[in-house]
Image 1 (tube, rainbow, N blue to C red):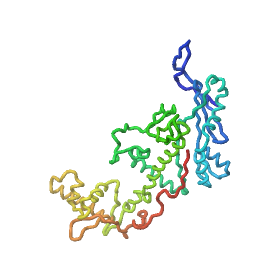
Image 2: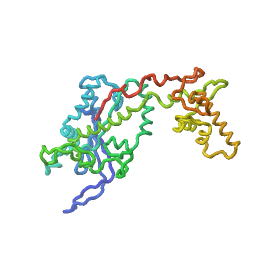
Image 3: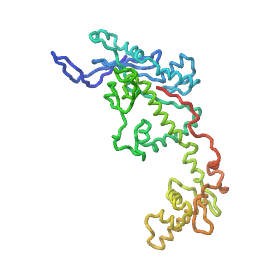
Length: 394
């Protein structure tokens, strides 16, 4: 048990027949324990009326207690279950957590915090109303190969940060976006829950559940605003799992068979030309504009000439014949570089060059110039997120 002093909070004080609202310092009592059912948890109670109680517990810690009673072997590191012998059985134990009698469990956890509830609330015949103040629904994906996961994380994390947009996040939460993918004009720029209503257990707009009206007939089932009481935990879990599933499916559709560095590694080492050694390509450096120019859509069928590339690579036209010849000579050397690497070919009896559909293997490549990859029509091992087992937690 420990105590903590909070800042000033509004409290009520009786002065004669009047009730005055004033600011004063308040304290909160914390009770930490290892519960026999839910494991490591805490419960806190505020020392001012109405003595609100907040309980925090961890689903993975709860699962560890369940598996210990079931006799399942598992390996736990901190808040992470890195290995479980029977994943289907562990998932079934997690599903049982949603069937808990939450009111009974929370009443039992809050009872040690206030040993004299009858004395404080004797004039008032009321019971506790439990709401879900904060919750987290996590989906754990277990990989059998650590090296595979390390490579996959280096691909998916930058992809998620650079490729996902605000409209994608809104779709995960069933929010409407325009057909073009742009955010609607009515969007205020923030996706959040109204915290005062969330704390007080009131309804929150945007989330709905199929239930009867409060105080109405049970047969009148309709989609109504979602309440934050513990009765809505099943609906909360259903929505959260669908949101996580959309994110996982989006990441699973990414082609992770090869990284960009792996695709370009075969063209970056130097090659031995007919007369001399040709330097390596620099697709992310000096040769970036050149590669973008030869892949221009206008050159897809008939190819490109020196003057076509001159117009794209140089912003301003040459002011003299000497400068024009110097630019054309530079382009001629760059085309020779691409031809030596097998990226382009010269169209017979013309002065045009065309991008090859497939780069041929170079017998002149030095054996120690880097890794070699199979042709595009051969399967590549690995890829996808199939080498995993899913484990969800509330």
